[in-house]
Amino acid sequence: MEKIKIITIGREYASGGRSVGKLISEKLGIPFYNKEILHMAAEKLNMSADDVKNADETAANSLLYSISLMNNLSSASSLPLNDRIYIEEREVIKSLAEQGPCVIVGRCADSILKEIRDDVLNVFIYADSEARAKRAINEYNESPDSVYASLRKHDKKRSTYYNLNTGQKWGAKDNYDLCLNSSKLGIEMCADLIIHTAANM
Image (cartoon, rainbow, N blue to C red; front, top):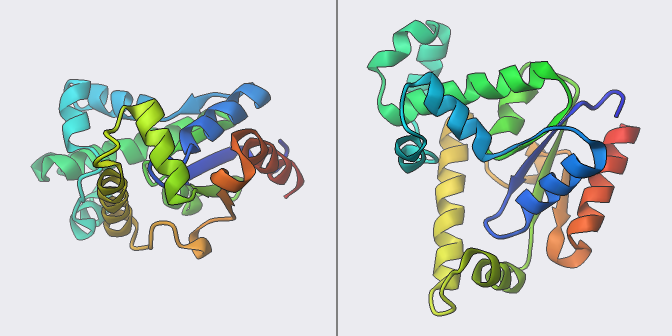
């Protein structure tokens, strides 16, 4: 990659977005960050990863975290836990991007980095409901009886988290440079298209 150094991937639940990101990382030989961001934030907060995970992707109050950011992180200790977690994850993402080319999945990375960098390719991965249900059952051990309800639940949680933290609409094409249907294209083709786009932007 030349101009584009950071690839962010937003994704519907069970769309294969994480697999796409991991494959890009392997093909390009660059770091891949997903749950690692949560663990780094937990360390900064002196909390266990499990405690942070329980609060992760819970909607933060966008006004509160904006005020906190403007007043520096020293004022963040008085904020609710989910706001503090988001602030720390935000700082982790910015720090990782400074270290060099990488792939970052989720955590509003597209919006966070769009504000401060012009070498970012923002991607959104989606898929047909049937394909997502199949992946959720086979890879995440979801029950066939409740899988569609689970898809809706996870997507709602992600959209609420994203919308409130960024002031933008999760999954809306205007927020991304590239939107790909993994159920039509497959994981490898999605990865290859993203790599090609990053190399030629």
